[in-house]
Amino acid sequence: MCRVLKVPKSTYYQSFHKKPNVYEVENKKITQRICVIHKESDGRYGAPKIHAQLLKEGVKVSIKRVQRLMKKAGIRSNITKKYRPTPTQKPVEERENVLEQDFQTTTIHEKWVADITYIHTIHDGWCYLASVLDLHSKKIVGYKFGRKMTVDLVVEALDHAVQAQKPAPGLIIHTDLGTPYTSETFQEKLKKHEMIPSFSRKGCPYDNACIESFHATLKKEEVYRTRYENYETARVALFKYIEGWYNRKHIHSAIGFLTPEECESMCRAAS
Image (cartoon, rainbow, N blue to C red; front, side, top):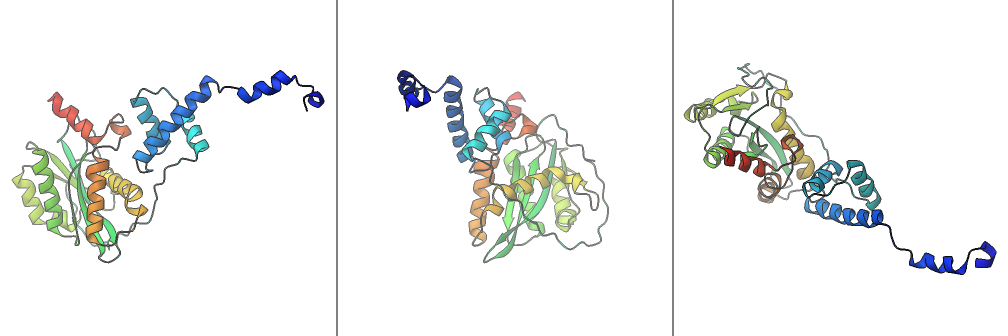
């Protein structure tokens, strides 16, 4: 064959012992780390967040290179988008919008946002998650999961946040115009904690976009990837997602690719 191709025998045999170049070796190491990060995120991270995590670890690599290596290795984010049912619209009374879509903050406990979302279970039907998010740290500071959408559900979520965070008076808490949040019971609770109520305008989800974004992320990364047998299995899964993943491991580009827990800790240390 060497005679036919006019290739020296030495060249032919050397081809079997060719060593990979430095770039190929580096790509292999980066790909291995990409696989680990992707697995640790339970398949939730795509190229942007994997790239950010690599940079945090001191790996100097471009986003395009990460995308190329992920594509070659067949790695991709496996989040899922699905339809979310919405409640029947009823006449509502407009209330003061103190926040006015100003989501900027300088530290924690300045502005909180709250909302309720639906979680479906096979045997117990629709259940409901009430969440409270700190706009500065992006941390879920309080939440409550229940079988019914009641005033008690949102009050307990707020109590959870207050007990854990102990905010100073004057904090703004923004919600939609849903009955649980406009109820006298919830408003009295805000007065007790010396909080300032703020409400979205009717039919304007952008006024509460940050908590809507969290619930959308929760659905894509957790809820739509499984089927919950009942209320209890859903409750445990949501606890693991919020406490074990979102607050402590989920990095956010809006806070410099820190986790909510890291951001909160930095603010506490600086105060």
